[in-house]
Picture 1 (tube, rainbow, N blue to C red):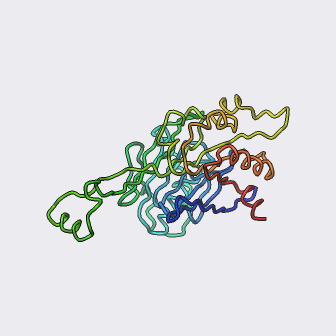
Picture 2 (cartoon, rainbow, N blue to C red):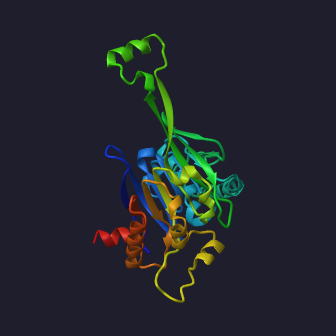
Picture 3 (cartoon, rainbow, N blue to C red):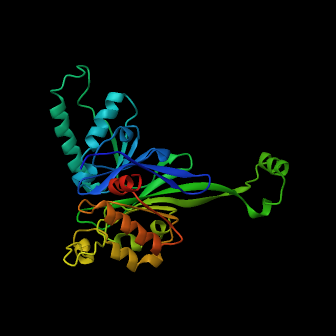
Length: 303
């Protein structure tokens, strides 16, 4: 399959939207850039849009999710921009550092810049805690269930709201109170967006901040095709550490999101099968906005 850069605009509210840029096809590559948040989720391929983002959140160590991370680092170093931050499961750190050293050895033979310091490490790694994204947003990981150590991520947004006792005041009265040092507002934390990464359905069912995020980017590797001898059964999906369409249907009442974006569909599915999947999910979740971030689907609906 040709590597293409797809774009999906997701409306969160009348005044707020985000853009997903990249591609996600199971077993081939997952790379989802959200420019509005200056972040990348997984990086199985390194696009121009990816290199512009300073934060990459890796869900696990499989090559189609982490394989181009070293290229992201080297490209940003040549661009002479700030060191990127890589958030990943702690189990991935040692192996990634070793692979990075191997790529540095290979690059020493490329004399694109004789003064380039190939002994430097052009990235920072974190494995736990929250990471600030901007003045009022931060991201935290959550453990998931896959064939290897894995984690998803939740982006939280902090909003200041006026305390109830001051709601009836005029603008001048509020300003006057602030000038006297009175704390007139309180902070509300919203789970703005969740990214599941590769996981079984059990990896998210006990996480209310995922199931209640405004936007949920959710893997669904296997779907119904109507074939009697289809090997992609719900049980086989669990064995492989993934989600099947049937798992979502069985637990539909637990999803409280405004938008669900399905990603990471198996490469064996045809465009029409994915279109039918979207229709089934839209019928099942009538009060939600159902999106598919898959190059086959996007190209089919756009002609």
